Image 1 (cartoon, rainbow over the protein chains, first blue to last red):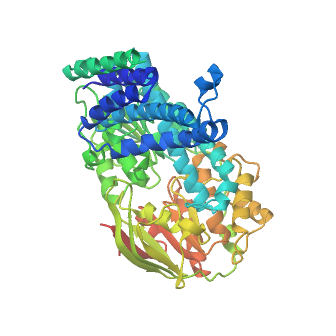
Image 2 (tube, chains in turn orange, yellow; image 1 turned 120 degrees about the vertical axis):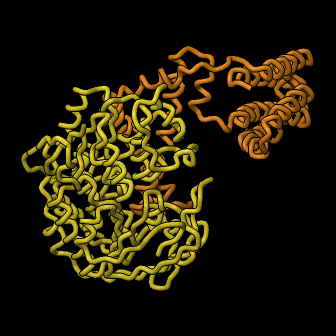
Image 3 (cartoon, each protein chain N blue to C red; image 1 turned 135 degrees about the vertical axis):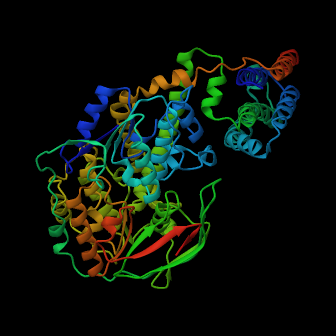
Length: 239
Length: 382
């Protein structure tokens, strides 16, 4: 499977999840997605847990508001009917399942390309060179921020200002961590753009590194794309 | 073809190197720390190599490490020496005709340093080098830099008025640690550190020397094992660091504020919670900073030259506030005069009762300090 095909499949599945209006449609989408994730031949347990972890806070909040406080589903309020908590619970379940499916779609895509390096993934994408360069720069900025978090924590823990594990002083001094992280990000960016990048013309290296040709689509892309499209049509048709 | 840029600290060597590289550009650059050694465009070692790899081989390949084993690692998580070796490897695969190195080879262990110098001397490309531990590499041309004194630093005066200190004995028992997804750095490692002693951690690049510092300072938590101070259990990753004054290999890994005053004030407040620590006053620390070459607490730390920042990183170790001193490659970027002065300051701290642990690949510097060597290798400390 190529990154192009995977992204197209992911978009189709996400569109199907958004179009689905009931649990049956969402179950169809979820079933297809589970097969797709299993096809990566990697354990999908962590993908399921991550997706559940993303969905659960929303589920708790919506259950509290719609089932606990409001006691009616939005369509019942719009229709001016008395409504029930069961209908509210069904509404919350559909919304949260939809979020779960979307999160799982992203996780499943990651599973398929877990062995690829970010540069290899971007290189195989069919996109304008400028877009691919921007993607690499965006990924590098994310890495820089993560590295800055690590550096800032090292400094503040070694300085006795915060601790590695949870402590009240971490809560009190959390703002120092945030301030230090951004200071480090700025310093790293300035360091690169002042010395290394101009001397090396480092950014122009990406022209070569991203320039290697890669197949736009593979046979598997067609199969999964057709399945995703069928799923979208089914989700719309079942409305 | 090699060009050696010689001179003392603050003589304008770095500026001269950059000017030279601008003339010869595009040129590969390896700065003293990660921002200067790595491209900053890659998320993995494999991608870092792919960015620099030229379609056709131009130079002899320099591969002192098995980089395939590091392929999935994030470049900034490599040790300082490994980052430099990765940078040299990337250069050897690239089509640059020129490489400029600003004191980065000082982070390499002796074997890798010899390999790197031999590679740079082979002559199928131009190498421009600043290095405080070399006089004149044979066969290299030399550009002499001489500048006026700046950031005058008096380490003898900085340690003159320190009071004797009774540091606790440290017992590390069965310590195990590995980075997520990585090999074991320590496997049931045990070692005792006595007060009023100086220890030098030795071992190849990537062996875990800096990791041991981070474990002792509470930056990392061990998978298993204990640390005890005079027999009492100590878990800095839970309780916070109240024992070690750390001067990091890269000074920019230790600042707790944008200005010197901010950094000092935050650390003072943090240490004030411990009864056993006598926190030096702001004025005392300002005076000490002046002796290290920085006259104002309003000084923005990142506006200082790197060599001055490195010296300022010794502020808390030299203040005597904390009983144990940890210095990670303290001589990087420092000229011979300053290295001798630092050796004297370390000896004085140990004589006053502090415990000192330092990491250096600078044998000449280490030979001037009475110390016990601890070898970090294969998961143990011996």
